[in-house]
Image (tube, rainbow over all chains, first blue to last red; front, top):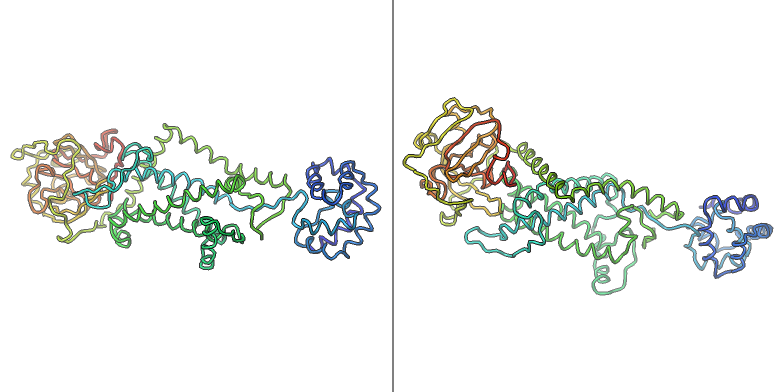
Length: 332
Length: 241
């Protein structure tokens, strides 16, 4: 960053007059320029005019004195240090702005973060995470809807005789048509569900990416403020990272639900082969309840997750497809 | 992690990452019923294969104390059609055929003469309920030895008086807890529970435990579409626990 400052004074001198047209037409820098014009709009319409009419020659001469004053300007280095200064190579007009010594501090104070033509963005979701997210989403949908159809065959956790049904699950919410069909979906997508979970956990662990999302004891204190903001319209806590403490809690919980649903599912599928696991989970009957409870956990998570996605808009949703999030609300 | 990118650059990077994910859209083909039918058939087939691999011949299913057995009245009668196909118990014989040295008709007394096993095991229904019952009978493996069956054969097929039919893999049939069951709760099987002889295998789901046995066949080839009454309609063939 420091040398970035150093460079600036040097480059404009040579770059500016040399090829104003060339770079302008070259890479479609019209856009950045336009952005700059807007950013600078408050300061000086004259410079806008200069940009549009591109009278690059006149600014050249004053540019030198302006540049030489820059180091003297105390406000200048700070924003330039955090944010890459407007690259002279990118847009010739930049120095044009610098020609006005007064304009420099104004701009720096008004919008220190604003980078002409630059967008804040974060590569939030690596490919492995995006693939497993979507495979998991589909698998989970199939597992829950087919699971409800299976449960419909004996909607009870008690004895067969006498049978006390707990709920009558509407057929419309279920997949598979009948018990046998639902079991086929369940026994097929359990592999995708398990595989996506295993790949996800493996990736998170070995890449270290889990640090962005794993709920840890230090997140505990942040849960209530966030919940108060979401549910009780309390003040919004400052964003400190990719995920807030409540999000971390939610996402970390789903891993727990997933592990629980798989462990209990194995016992329900193979209670004889995995009798030791059935024992650890409190027996066959209790395991059936745990299995159902894990689904309830997902059912609690999913609506909240979807509502949040809708509330946070397209760029948030799109980031789970492209990986890149435009203008994330947190700083770093 | 936040970067500052030129807008075009960001769009290019986003597009590139999006394209990497694009092949997944091809999986949408499974929304077509024909494709999804194929997929779940493959899925169940794979699950059955994995079940066979997971099956351990010597691993015993849990057994229970007499106090944990449900009362006889609370052991459900379950059948796919009639509960009492009116088997002529006096003249009943079991037909044994296929890959065996001593094919023919066997009387119940020849089966009860084999070493008797009593076990309290869990009977698990595919619907999700289960009961712990008390069962008595002869090991299928002992019977197969008696009739000189080729235990290298892959399957055991059974046919029943109520036209139910089933087939099981040989490793499961040879499991020490797999019984030709002729007693429940210390009494001869009653008609609705499958008199005079039924399968009782605590390593299999309930629909594999065929009742009112009439024929046992040892074979290495199953007729497609004739592997079991419920299996032919979509239940998992292995049906193992």
